[in-house]
Length: 538
Image 1 (cartoon, rainbow, N blue to C red):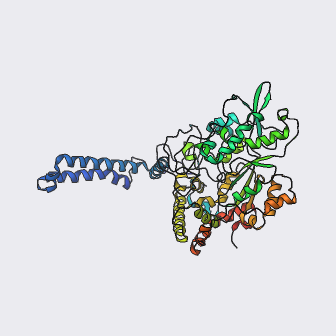
Image 2 (image 1 turned 180 degrees about the vertical axis):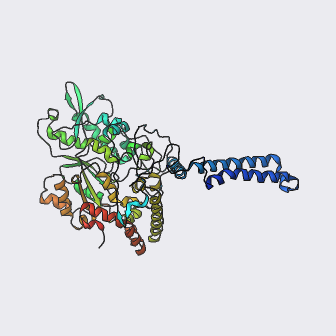
Image 3 (image 1 turned 90 degrees about the vertical axis):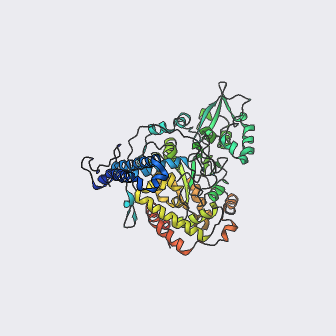
Protein backbone atom coordinates (compact mmCIF):
# COMPACT_ATOMS: atom_id res chain seq x y z
CA UNK A 1 0.00 0.00 0.00
CA UNK A 2 1.45 3.29 -1.03
CA UNK A 3 2.03 6.12 1.39
CA UNK A 4 1.26 9.66 0.35
CA UNK A 5 3.89 12.07 1.54
CA UNK A 6 3.69 15.83 1.50
CA UNK A 7 6.68 18.12 1.51
CA UNK A 8 7.16 20.82 4.12
CA UNK A 9 6.23 23.49 1.61
CA UNK A 10 2.71 22.11 1.30
CA UNK A 11 2.97 20.86 -2.30
CA UNK A 12 2.11 17.25 -2.97
CA UNK A 13 4.35 15.29 -5.36
CA UNK A 14 1.64 15.56 -8.00
CA UNK A 15 1.23 19.33 -7.71
CA UNK A 16 1.67 21.21 -11.00
CA UNK A 17 4.55 23.61 -11.36
CA UNK A 18 3.84 27.23 -10.66
CA UNK A 19 5.16 28.35 -14.01
CA UNK A 20 2.68 26.36 -16.11
CA UNK A 21 -0.50 27.41 -14.38
CA UNK A 22 -3.65 25.35 -14.26
CA UNK A 23 -7.13 26.80 -15.05
CA UNK A 24 -7.80 26.84 -11.31
CA UNK A 25 -4.63 28.89 -10.73
CA UNK A 26 -5.45 31.31 -13.53
CA UNK A 27 -8.94 31.83 -12.18
CA UNK A 28 -7.65 32.44 -8.64
CA UNK A 29 -5.04 34.93 -9.86
CA UNK A 30 -7.46 36.84 -12.08
CA UNK A 31 -10.25 37.12 -9.50
CA UNK A 32 -8.73 40.12 -7.71
CA UNK A 33 -8.13 41.89 -11.03
CA UNK A 34 -11.73 41.42 -12.11
CA UNK A 35 -13.03 42.81 -8.82
CA UNK A 36 -10.68 45.78 -9.00
CA UNK A 37 -11.79 46.59 -12.54
CA UNK A 38 -15.43 46.37 -11.58
CA UNK A 39 -15.02 48.64 -8.58
CA UNK A 40 -13.00 51.15 -10.61
CA UNK A 41 -15.86 51.25 -13.12
CA UNK A 42 -18.34 51.87 -10.32
CA UNK A 43 -16.10 54.58 -8.98
CA UNK A 44 -15.90 56.28 -12.39
CA UNK A 45 -19.68 56.42 -12.51
CA UNK A 46 -19.95 57.42 -8.89
CA UNK A 47 -21.76 60.67 -9.72
CA UNK A 48 -24.67 58.55 -10.95
CA UNK A 49 -24.46 56.07 -8.06
CA UNK A 50 -26.66 57.01 -5.15
CA UNK A 51 -24.77 54.73 -2.73
CA UNK A 52 -21.60 56.67 -3.40
CA UNK A 53 -23.16 59.73 -1.82
CA UNK A 54 -24.32 57.73 1.14
CA UNK A 55 -21.10 55.87 1.93
CA UNK A 56 -18.43 58.17 0.64
CA UNK A 57 -15.03 57.49 -0.86
CA UNK A 58 -13.34 56.40 2.35
CA UNK A 59 -15.87 53.61 3.03
CA UNK A 60 -15.66 52.22 -0.50
CA UNK A 61 -11.88 52.20 -0.40
CA UNK A 62 -11.95 50.19 2.82
CA UNK A 63 -14.38 47.75 1.26
CA UNK A 64 -12.20 47.41 -1.83
CA UNK A 65 -9.11 46.73 0.29
CA UNK A 66 -10.90 44.04 2.34
CA UNK A 67 -12.12 42.28 -0.81
CA UNK A 68 -8.64 42.31 -2.35
CA UNK A 69 -7.00 40.88 0.79
CA UNK A 70 -9.61 38.16 1.09
CA UNK A 71 -9.25 37.10 -2.54
CA UNK A 72 -5.47 37.12 -2.33
CA UNK A 73 -5.55 34.82 0.69
CA UNK A 74 -7.94 32.43 -1.06
CA UNK A 75 -5.87 32.48 -4.23
CA UNK A 76 -2.61 31.86 -2.42
CA UNK A 77 -4.10 28.99 -0.44
CA UNK A 78 -5.59 27.38 -3.56
CA UNK A 79 -2.23 27.61 -5.28
CA UNK A 80 -0.52 25.87 -2.36
CA UNK A 81 -2.77 22.83 -2.77
CA UNK A 82 -3.12 22.42 0.96
CA UNK A 83 -6.83 22.11 1.64
CA UNK A 84 -6.54 19.01 3.82
CA UNK A 85 -3.60 20.50 5.68
CA UNK A 86 -5.61 23.62 6.51
CA UNK A 87 -8.53 21.57 7.75
CA UNK A 88 -6.14 19.47 9.80
CA UNK A 89 -4.47 22.56 11.21
CA UNK A 90 -7.81 24.08 12.19
CA UNK A 91 -8.92 20.79 13.73
CA UNK A 92 -5.75 20.59 15.81
CA UNK A 93 -6.21 24.17 16.91
CA UNK A 94 -9.81 23.61 17.94
CA UNK A 95 -8.86 20.46 19.82
CA UNK A 96 -6.67 22.50 22.10
CA UNK A 97 -9.09 25.36 22.61
CA UNK A 98 -12.42 23.68 23.12
CA UNK A 99 -13.90 21.27 25.62
CA UNK A 100 -14.24 17.53 25.49
CA UNK A 101 -17.76 16.62 24.45
CA UNK A 102 -20.42 15.34 26.82
CA UNK A 103 -20.41 11.80 25.45
CA UNK A 104 -17.89 10.83 28.14
CA UNK A 105 -18.41 10.00 31.76
CA UNK A 106 -17.96 12.58 34.47
CA UNK A 107 -14.67 11.04 35.56
CA UNK A 108 -13.23 10.47 32.14
CA UNK A 109 -12.37 13.62 30.27
CA UNK A 110 -12.20 17.37 30.89
CA UNK A 111 -14.73 19.62 29.19
CA UNK A 112 -12.37 22.46 28.40
CA UNK A 113 -8.71 23.18 28.24
CA UNK A 114 -7.90 26.35 30.12
CA UNK A 115 -4.14 26.34 30.13
CA UNK A 116 -1.37 26.05 27.61
CA UNK A 117 0.34 22.69 27.53
CA UNK A 118 3.99 22.34 26.73
CA UNK A 119 4.67 19.57 24.24
CA UNK A 120 7.69 17.32 24.02
CA UNK A 121 10.27 18.14 21.39
CA UNK A 122 11.45 14.88 19.90
CA UNK A 123 13.07 14.37 16.56
CA UNK A 124 11.39 11.34 14.96
CA UNK A 125 10.76 10.21 11.43
CA UNK A 126 7.29 8.72 11.64
CA UNK A 127 5.14 8.44 8.55
CA UNK A 128 1.70 6.86 8.58
CA UNK A 129 0.08 5.48 5.43
CA UNK A 130 -3.00 7.44 4.39
CA UNK A 131 -5.20 4.47 3.56
CA UNK A 132 -8.69 5.98 3.52
CA UNK A 133 -11.31 3.33 2.80
CA UNK A 134 -8.78 0.77 1.58
CA UNK A 135 -8.88 -0.90 5.01
CA UNK A 136 -12.09 -2.59 3.82
CA UNK A 137 -11.75 -4.96 0.87
CA UNK A 138 -15.00 -6.67 -0.11
CA UNK A 139 -16.24 -6.31 3.44
CA UNK A 140 -13.09 -7.78 5.00
CA UNK A 141 -11.14 -5.63 7.45
CA UNK A 142 -7.42 -5.08 6.89
CA UNK A 143 -5.32 -3.80 9.80
CA UNK A 144 -2.06 -2.00 9.17
CA UNK A 145 1.06 -2.25 11.34
CA UNK A 146 2.23 0.66 13.47
CA UNK A 147 5.68 1.97 14.18
CA UNK A 148 6.90 0.85 17.60
CA UNK A 149 8.87 3.56 19.43
CA UNK A 150 12.20 2.60 20.94
CA UNK A 151 12.93 2.69 24.67
CA UNK A 152 15.13 5.74 24.12
CA UNK A 153 12.28 7.59 22.43
CA UNK A 154 9.87 6.66 25.22
CA UNK A 155 12.34 7.93 27.80
CA UNK A 156 12.50 11.25 25.98
CA UNK A 157 8.72 11.53 26.28
CA UNK A 158 8.53 10.53 29.95
CA UNK A 159 11.96 10.85 31.60
CA UNK A 160 10.54 10.85 35.14
CA UNK A 161 9.00 7.41 34.71
CA UNK A 162 12.36 5.99 33.72
CA UNK A 163 14.08 7.69 36.66
CA UNK A 164 11.70 6.15 39.23
CA UNK A 165 10.78 2.68 37.96
CA UNK A 166 13.75 0.27 38.01
CA UNK A 167 14.64 -2.07 35.17
CA UNK A 168 14.47 -5.09 37.49
CA UNK A 169 12.15 -5.94 40.37
CA UNK A 170 12.59 -7.99 43.54
CA UNK A 171 12.83 -11.69 42.71
CA UNK A 172 11.10 -12.63 45.96
CA UNK A 173 7.88 -10.86 44.93
CA UNK A 174 5.31 -12.16 42.50
CA UNK A 175 4.31 -8.57 41.81
CA UNK A 176 6.66 -5.96 40.30
CA UNK A 177 8.01 -4.38 43.51
CA UNK A 178 11.18 -2.62 44.54
CA UNK A 179 12.58 -0.71 47.50
CA UNK A 180 12.96 3.04 47.30
CA UNK A 181 14.77 5.14 49.87
CA UNK A 182 12.46 7.44 51.81
CA UNK A 183 13.95 10.80 52.78
CA UNK A 184 10.98 12.37 54.58
CA UNK A 185 11.04 13.21 58.28
CA UNK A 186 8.75 12.02 61.03
CA UNK A 187 6.69 15.21 61.02
CA UNK A 188 5.98 15.14 57.29
CA UNK A 189 2.79 13.70 55.83
CA UNK A 190 3.69 11.09 53.18
CA UNK A 191 0.25 11.47 51.56
CA UNK A 192 -0.32 15.17 52.19
CA UNK A 193 0.00 16.13 48.53
CA UNK A 194 -1.39 12.97 46.93
CA UNK A 195 -3.68 14.16 44.15
CA UNK A 196 -6.01 11.17 44.43
CA UNK A 197 -6.60 11.95 48.09
CA UNK A 198 -7.23 15.62 47.34
CA UNK A 199 -9.73 15.03 44.52
CA UNK A 200 -11.59 11.97 45.88
CA UNK A 201 -13.08 12.60 49.31
CA UNK A 202 -14.15 8.97 49.61
CA UNK A 203 -10.47 8.04 49.85
CA UNK A 204 -9.74 10.25 52.86
CA UNK A 205 -10.36 7.48 55.40
CA UNK A 206 -8.25 5.02 53.43
CA UNK A 207 -5.33 7.44 53.24
CA UNK A 208 -5.70 8.24 56.93
CA UNK A 209 -5.36 4.54 57.74
CA UNK A 210 -2.32 4.27 55.47
CA UNK A 211 -0.85 7.37 57.13
CA UNK A 212 -1.09 5.84 60.61
CA UNK A 213 0.75 2.71 59.52
CA UNK A 214 3.31 4.38 57.31
CA UNK A 215 6.31 4.69 59.61
CA UNK A 216 5.83 1.27 61.16
CA UNK A 217 6.14 -0.44 57.79
CA UNK A 218 9.32 1.26 56.64
CA UNK A 219 12.40 -0.95 56.52
CA UNK A 220 15.58 0.33 58.12
CA UNK A 221 19.03 -0.55 56.82
CA UNK A 222 22.20 1.28 57.84
CA UNK A 223 20.14 4.09 59.45
CA UNK A 224 18.26 4.63 56.20
CA UNK A 225 14.55 4.17 55.62
CA UNK A 226 13.32 2.18 52.65
CA UNK A 227 9.80 2.05 51.28
CA UNK A 228 8.38 -0.86 49.28
CA UNK A 229 6.89 0.30 45.99
CA UNK A 230 4.78 -1.83 43.64
CA UNK A 231 3.15 -1.66 40.23
CA UNK A 232 0.23 -3.89 39.18
CA UNK A 233 1.06 -7.48 38.35
CA UNK A 234 -2.03 -7.56 36.16
CA UNK A 235 -4.40 -5.03 34.63
CA UNK A 236 -8.12 -5.25 33.86
CA UNK A 237 -7.95 -2.98 30.83
CA UNK A 238 -11.46 -2.94 29.32
CA UNK A 239 -13.92 -2.41 27.96
CA UNK A 240 -16.39 0.04 29.55
CA UNK A 241 -19.91 -1.36 30.12
CA UNK A 242 -18.64 -4.88 29.48
CA UNK A 243 -18.66 -6.24 33.04
CA UNK A 244 -15.24 -5.10 34.27
CA UNK A 245 -16.72 -3.89 37.58
CA UNK A 246 -18.30 -7.29 38.23
CA UNK A 247 -15.04 -9.05 37.39
CA UNK A 248 -13.15 -6.71 39.71
CA UNK A 249 -15.58 -7.18 42.61
CA UNK A 250 -15.38 -10.97 42.35
CA UNK A 251 -11.65 -11.18 41.80
CA UNK A 252 -10.79 -9.04 44.81
CA UNK A 253 -12.47 -11.63 47.04
CA UNK A 254 -9.51 -13.92 46.39
CA UNK A 255 -7.21 -13.70 49.45
CA UNK A 256 -4.06 -13.36 47.34
CA UNK A 257 -5.33 -10.52 45.14
CA UNK A 258 -4.85 -6.92 46.26
CA UNK A 259 -6.05 -4.12 44.00
CA UNK A 260 -5.20 -0.44 44.15
CA UNK A 261 -7.23 1.41 46.79
CA UNK A 262 -9.40 2.84 44.00
CA UNK A 263 -10.80 0.55 41.29
CA UNK A 264 -10.04 2.80 38.33
CA UNK A 265 -7.03 5.08 38.85
CA UNK A 266 -7.01 5.93 35.11
CA UNK A 267 -3.41 6.99 35.64
CA UNK A 268 -1.83 5.66 32.47
CA UNK A 269 -4.56 7.11 30.26
CA UNK A 270 -5.65 10.34 31.98
CA UNK A 271 -4.43 11.32 35.41
CA UNK A 272 -0.76 11.56 34.47
CA UNK A 273 -1.81 14.19 31.95
CA UNK A 274 -4.00 16.09 34.42
CA UNK A 275 -7.36 14.84 33.11
CA UNK A 276 -9.53 14.56 36.21
CA UNK A 277 -13.20 15.27 35.55
CA UNK A 278 -15.33 16.00 32.52
CA UNK A 279 -16.48 19.49 33.49
CA UNK A 280 -13.08 20.75 34.53
CA UNK A 281 -10.06 22.00 32.60
CA UNK A 282 -6.73 20.25 32.72
CA UNK A 283 -5.36 20.01 36.24
CA UNK A 284 -1.79 19.57 37.34
CA UNK A 285 -0.68 16.10 36.21
CA UNK A 286 -0.78 13.38 38.86
CA UNK A 287 2.81 12.30 39.57
CA UNK A 288 3.85 8.67 39.26
CA UNK A 289 4.45 8.64 43.02
CA UNK A 290 0.77 9.37 43.66
CA UNK A 291 -0.18 6.38 41.53
CA UNK A 292 2.26 4.15 43.40
CA UNK A 293 0.73 5.28 46.72
CA UNK A 294 -2.45 3.48 45.68
CA UNK A 295 -0.64 0.15 46.06
CA UNK A 296 0.79 0.83 49.53
CA UNK A 297 -1.77 -1.39 51.25
CA UNK A 298 -0.84 -4.24 48.91
CA UNK A 299 2.84 -3.53 49.56
CA UNK A 300 2.12 -3.81 53.30
CA UNK A 301 0.70 -7.31 52.78
CA UNK A 302 3.74 -8.33 50.78
CA UNK A 303 6.07 -6.90 53.40
CA UNK A 304 4.22 -8.70 56.21
CA UNK A 305 4.74 -12.00 54.41
CA UNK A 306 8.48 -11.48 54.17
CA UNK A 307 8.84 -10.23 57.74
CA UNK A 308 11.03 -7.36 56.59
CA UNK A 309 13.77 -9.61 55.16
CA UNK A 310 12.78 -8.70 51.65
CA UNK A 311 15.94 -6.67 51.05
CA UNK A 312 17.96 -9.82 51.59
CA UNK A 313 16.12 -11.44 48.68
CA UNK A 314 16.24 -14.78 50.54
CA UNK A 315 14.38 -16.74 47.89
CA UNK A 316 11.00 -16.98 49.62
CA UNK A 317 8.39 -15.90 47.09
CA UNK A 318 5.05 -14.55 48.17
CA UNK A 319 1.83 -15.34 46.32
CA UNK A 320 0.31 -11.85 46.50
CA UNK A 321 -0.70 -10.27 43.23
CA UNK A 322 -1.28 -6.55 42.78
CA UNK A 323 -3.79 -5.33 40.22
CA UNK A 324 -5.83 -2.41 38.97
CA UNK A 325 -8.99 -2.16 36.86
CA UNK A 326 -9.07 1.04 34.80
CA UNK A 327 -11.45 0.23 31.96
CA UNK A 328 -9.94 3.05 29.87
CA UNK A 329 -6.50 1.43 29.56
CA UNK A 330 -7.22 -0.64 26.46
CA UNK A 331 -8.66 2.06 24.22
CA UNK A 332 -8.28 5.60 25.57
CA UNK A 333 -5.25 7.42 24.18
CA UNK A 334 -7.09 10.73 23.96
CA UNK A 335 -4.34 12.80 25.57
CA UNK A 336 -1.76 12.11 22.87
CA UNK A 337 -2.78 15.03 20.67
CA UNK A 338 -2.17 17.45 23.54
CA UNK A 339 1.20 16.13 24.69
CA UNK A 340 2.80 14.05 21.92
CA UNK A 341 1.41 15.74 18.80
CA UNK A 342 4.60 17.23 17.44
CA UNK A 343 5.24 14.44 14.96
CA UNK A 344 2.27 13.29 12.90
CA UNK A 345 -1.02 14.99 13.82
CA UNK A 346 -2.87 11.95 12.45
CA UNK A 347 -2.00 8.89 14.54
CA UNK A 348 -0.46 8.69 18.02
CA UNK A 349 3.33 8.33 17.87
CA UNK A 350 3.15 6.41 21.18
CA UNK A 351 0.41 4.47 22.93
CA UNK A 352 -0.24 3.56 26.57
CA UNK A 353 0.92 -0.02 26.03
CA UNK A 354 4.33 1.17 24.83
CA UNK A 355 5.11 2.61 28.25
CA UNK A 356 3.70 -0.35 30.19
CA UNK A 357 5.71 -2.73 28.04
CA UNK A 358 8.90 -0.73 28.61
CA UNK A 359 8.69 -1.49 32.35
CA UNK A 360 6.60 -4.68 32.49
CA UNK A 361 7.16 -6.77 29.37
CA UNK A 362 5.66 -9.81 31.14
CA UNK A 363 2.56 -8.10 32.56
CA UNK A 364 -0.80 -9.85 32.29
CA UNK A 365 -4.06 -8.34 31.06
CA UNK A 366 -7.70 -9.22 31.58
CA UNK A 367 -10.16 -8.06 28.92
CA UNK A 368 -13.93 -8.33 29.19
CA UNK A 369 -15.91 -7.75 26.00
CA UNK A 370 -19.55 -7.92 25.00
CA UNK A 371 -21.60 -7.50 21.84
CA UNK A 372 -20.56 -3.96 20.79
CA UNK A 373 -24.15 -3.18 19.76
CA UNK A 374 -25.41 -3.87 23.29
CA UNK A 375 -22.37 -2.21 24.78
CA UNK A 376 -23.14 1.03 22.98
CA UNK A 377 -26.75 1.11 24.14
CA UNK A 378 -25.70 0.38 27.72
CA UNK A 379 -23.08 3.10 27.45
CA UNK A 380 -25.69 5.57 26.23
CA UNK A 381 -28.13 4.71 29.03
CA UNK A 382 -25.42 4.99 31.68
CA UNK A 383 -23.80 8.25 30.61
CA UNK A 384 -26.62 10.20 29.01
CA UNK A 385 -28.06 12.76 31.40
CA UNK A 386 -31.49 13.75 30.10
CA UNK A 387 -34.05 13.02 27.35
CA UNK A 388 -32.97 9.41 27.06
CA UNK A 389 -35.12 7.32 24.72
CA UNK A 390 -34.80 4.69 22.04
CA UNK A 391 -35.60 7.38 19.45
CA UNK A 392 -32.91 9.72 20.77
CA UNK A 393 -30.41 6.87 20.74
CA UNK A 394 -31.36 6.11 17.14
CA UNK A 395 -30.74 9.73 16.10
CA UNK A 396 -27.38 9.81 17.84
CA UNK A 397 -26.34 6.49 16.30
CA UNK A 398 -27.24 7.61 12.77
CA UNK A 399 -25.32 10.84 13.19
CA UNK A 400 -22.29 9.00 14.61
CA UNK A 401 -22.29 6.44 11.79
CA UNK A 402 -22.32 9.19 9.18
CA UNK A 403 -19.52 11.05 10.94
CA UNK A 404 -17.36 7.92 11.23
CA UNK A 405 -17.88 7.10 7.57
CA UNK A 406 -16.83 10.64 6.64
CA UNK A 407 -13.73 10.31 8.79
CA UNK A 408 -12.75 7.08 7.04
CA UNK A 409 -13.05 8.83 3.68
CA UNK A 410 -10.23 11.18 4.65
CA UNK A 411 -8.17 9.32 7.28
CA UNK A 412 -6.87 5.93 8.27
CA UNK A 413 -8.85 3.62 10.53
CA UNK A 414 -6.35 4.05 13.36
CA UNK A 415 -6.52 7.81 13.00
CA UNK A 416 -10.32 7.79 13.31
CA UNK A 417 -10.17 5.47 16.33
CA UNK A 418 -7.62 7.59 18.19
CA UNK A 419 -8.41 11.09 16.92
CA UNK A 420 -9.19 13.08 20.05
CA UNK A 421 -11.10 15.90 18.44
CA UNK A 422 -13.17 13.62 16.24
CA UNK A 423 -14.00 11.12 19.00
CA UNK A 424 -15.27 13.85 21.25
CA UNK A 425 -17.68 15.12 18.61
CA UNK A 426 -19.41 11.75 18.23
CA UNK A 427 -22.86 11.80 19.89
CA UNK A 428 -22.29 8.21 21.11
CA UNK A 429 -19.00 6.41 21.77
CA UNK A 430 -19.06 4.31 18.63
CA UNK A 431 -15.27 3.92 18.61
CA UNK A 432 -15.09 2.07 21.94
CA UNK A 433 -16.65 -0.99 20.28
CA UNK A 434 -13.84 -1.32 17.72
CA UNK A 435 -12.24 -3.99 19.91
CA UNK A 436 -10.03 -5.50 17.25
CA UNK A 437 -8.40 -2.16 16.41
CA UNK A 438 -7.19 -1.69 19.97
CA UNK A 439 -6.28 -5.33 20.57
CA UNK A 440 -4.28 -5.33 17.34
CA UNK A 441 -2.17 -2.46 18.64
CA UNK A 442 -1.70 -4.11 22.05
CA UNK A 443 -0.48 -7.24 20.29
CA UNK A 444 2.14 -5.15 18.52
CA UNK A 445 4.14 -5.14 21.79
CA UNK A 446 2.67 -7.98 23.91
CA UNK A 447 2.03 -11.65 23.14
CA UNK A 448 -1.50 -12.99 22.90
CA UNK A 449 -0.87 -15.45 25.75
CA UNK A 450 -0.46 -12.47 28.09
CA UNK A 451 -4.17 -11.71 27.63
CA UNK A 452 -7.23 -13.48 28.97
CA UNK A 453 -10.14 -12.29 26.86
CA UNK A 454 -13.62 -13.08 28.16
CA UNK A 455 -17.10 -12.40 26.84
CA UNK A 456 -19.60 -10.89 29.24
CA UNK A 457 -22.25 -13.20 27.82
CA UNK A 458 -20.20 -16.27 28.87
CA UNK A 459 -19.25 -14.73 32.21
CA UNK A 460 -22.88 -14.04 33.12
CA UNK A 461 -23.99 -17.53 32.04
CA UNK A 462 -21.37 -19.38 34.10
CA UNK A 463 -19.61 -17.24 36.68
CA UNK A 464 -17.90 -20.20 38.35
CA UNK A 465 -16.24 -21.32 35.12
CA UNK A 466 -15.33 -17.75 34.19
CA UNK A 467 -13.60 -17.07 37.51
CA UNK A 468 -11.73 -20.38 37.38
CA UNK A 469 -10.33 -19.32 34.03
CA UNK A 470 -9.17 -16.09 35.63
CA UNK A 471 -7.53 -17.87 38.57
CA UNK A 472 -5.74 -20.26 36.25
CA UNK A 473 -4.55 -17.43 34.00
CA UNK A 474 -3.11 -15.53 36.98
CA UNK A 475 -1.63 -18.70 38.52
CA UNK A 476 -3.71 -18.22 41.65
CA UNK A 477 -4.37 -21.17 43.92
CA UNK A 478 -7.83 -22.70 43.96
CA UNK A 479 -10.37 -21.44 46.47
CA UNK A 480 -12.12 -23.53 49.05
CA UNK A 481 -15.75 -24.45 48.39
CA UNK A 482 -16.89 -21.80 50.84
CA UNK A 483 -14.70 -19.11 49.29
CA UNK A 484 -15.78 -20.04 45.77
CA UNK A 485 -19.43 -19.94 46.80
CA UNK A 486 -19.00 -16.39 48.13
CA UNK A 487 -17.53 -15.35 44.79
CA UNK A 488 -20.15 -17.12 42.68
CA UNK A 489 -23.22 -16.06 44.66
CA UNK A 490 -22.23 -12.43 44.90
CA UNK A 491 -24.82 -10.14 43.35
CA UNK A 492 -23.87 -8.76 39.93
CA UNK A 493 -22.16 -5.37 40.08
CA UNK A 494 -22.99 -2.23 38.09
CA UNK A 495 -26.06 -3.70 36.43
CA UNK A 496 -28.55 -1.53 34.55
CA UNK A 497 -30.54 0.93 36.64
CA UNK A 498 -34.32 0.34 36.93
CA UNK A 499 -35.15 3.70 35.37
CA UNK A 500 -33.03 2.79 32.35
CA UNK A 501 -34.67 -0.62 32.02
CA UNK A 502 -38.04 1.10 31.64
CA UNK A 503 -36.85 2.66 28.37
CA UNK A 504 -36.94 -0.75 26.73
CA UNK A 505 -34.65 -2.08 23.98
CA UNK A 506 -33.24 -0.08 21.10
CA UNK A 507 -35.28 0.20 17.93
CA UNK A 508 -34.93 -2.72 15.48
CA UNK A 509 -33.56 -0.57 12.64
CA UNK A 510 -31.05 0.99 15.03
CA UNK A 511 -29.82 -2.46 16.01
CA UNK A 512 -29.51 -3.55 12.38
CA UNK A 513 -27.52 -0.44 11.45
CA UNK A 514 -25.08 -1.12 14.29
CA UNK A 515 -24.82 -4.81 13.44
CA UNK A 516 -23.87 -3.89 9.89
CA UNK A 517 -21.33 -1.35 11.09
CA UNK A 518 -19.57 -3.61 13.60
CA UNK A 519 -19.72 -6.79 11.48
CA UNK A 520 -16.29 -6.50 9.76
CA UNK A 521 -14.61 -5.57 13.04
CA UNK A 522 -16.21 -8.48 14.88
CA UNK A 523 -15.32 -10.89 12.09
CA UNK A 524 -11.68 -9.80 12.24
CA UNK A 525 -11.68 -10.17 16.03
CA UNK A 526 -13.13 -13.68 15.74
CA UNK A 527 -10.43 -14.53 13.21
CA UNK A 528 -7.70 -13.10 15.45
CA UNK A 529 -8.91 -15.06 18.50
CA UNK A 530 -9.90 -18.16 16.52
CA UNK A 531 -13.35 -18.08 18.12
CA UNK A 532 -16.51 -17.48 16.10
CA UNK A 533 -18.39 -16.45 19.25
CA UNK A 534 -16.84 -12.99 18.88
CA UNK A 535 -18.88 -12.37 15.74
CA UNK A 536 -21.90 -11.91 18.05
CA UNK A 537 -24.38 -13.01 15.41
CA UNK A 538 -26.64 -16.01 15.81
